[in-house]
Length: 461
Image (tube, rainbow, N blue to C red; front, top):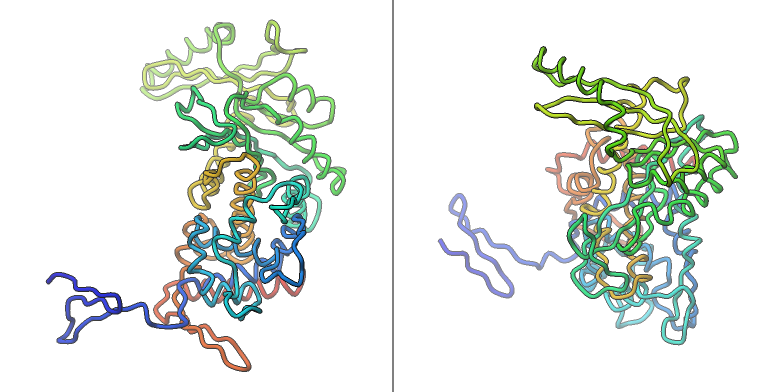
């Protein structure tokens, strides 16, 4: 039968002789009851308050309904819950869970909701570095960048012996006339070229850049800043940089060598390099033809380019024959023989950098880090930071509360879908606020386990 609907009621096919009717008239019901776990995670790591501390508010306090901490928390939590568009908040501001997470059940003014709508949040996103007459809220980029590293440091109870920092540039396609918009020949689109720095699952930097630059542009400055902050807390930690061939630049490698930082970078192949492993490729070809399987050999070179490098460096070559053709690959590294032979450094150390691409996908696909549709580059950078903070919050939930559960290795989107998107009836009384969550939720055991873990984390924070 055709579905009938009106402004008040939606009728569907009957079941068991009973009519099925739906309507948006349930009152205080939320579809995001699991967001309480995000609130508990935030209390454990104090992300929102410190992120809000990176903003400068020049509004008159007596006239302010929604303070910066409320606005920042609302935007970060909204992205984590899948609401990438600030237009969504015109309805979300009436959601009881958003009010609970903001710690504010009622607005001070009669015409306001407990949390902000799209216009107020838009003014926050368009804030400049320094407050002006028409933009009363500003933000401190350096403070925001430091906060990412601070949160990473605090995630470790003791100083590790070694950490590997992964660098990568990716495309952020643009569909308007944004400031800093350029066509990129490799990605074949107009885009930004943001730089990401991760350590495992931890996000340390997300830097928005125009696309008319080299992939490694600004990497020395970012790494110098991050390494300086890390060594101020961990003076003995060994730091290794890992990246693809776009970062095998003399400036970055020379900085690493001068500052006691190791590196392992991909190295683009060329005629000279291919010629240097010609005999090894022939042997790999013969072995592959004999066995019918791919064959690879490794060779070490002491190598320098003709003009662009300032010194000779250790290069590891993979001479591989697969699918009937040569597949040579090269890496350049400061790691020595004690760290492993060529095969181990290539297969176990360098190739592990591919996992970073999954983290970038989480940021861009799950948390809308590529939602950079406003005109100015400063505002788009702030949007990238909001999305990045949402990633840090969800990753902290995964790290603190989901170890040993079915969601221990789940992506941000999976955690959101299975653990945060829970329907609940909200009842507010004099003594408590109760969220009666769906009895049929398949992940209620995981929810209970996460709740216990977060309470313990809060008690020890």
